[in-house]
Length: 152
Picture (tube, rainbow, N blue to C red):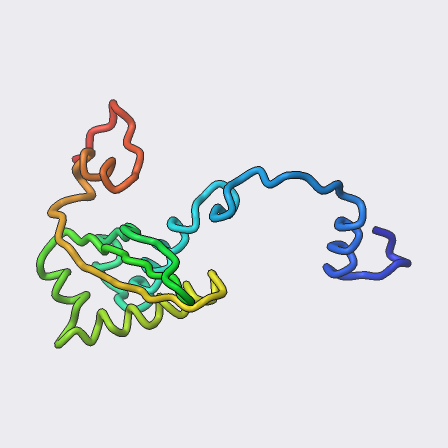
């Protein structure tokens, strides 16, 4: 892009759009790059956990999207948050459910912005004791574990 024709990102995007050929989609519509939308949704819930709970909880939690479907004018998303101990579950839920409601509000806001549509976010918290140290649990949660790797 010539400096005489303009500057900035807008000019670059315009020039690329004019000069690149159009072609077929290489990934399914719900995938961004090589990761599905479900991955990003789970990470947005986990990000909300990091922002709300600054100590141990974020590192002992993992989020898994169990259900993702369009339900009329909004998307229904069910996410299970797995933690290692019952005490962590209690912290995530909070007194009379206050913490999980706050967490859901923060995560839903980010997800709605990402999907550009309203979302019904259904959060569940379950204990999966010692999941970070058990290769079979890591695999079940979608985390690849090399065969020869042993967790201590």
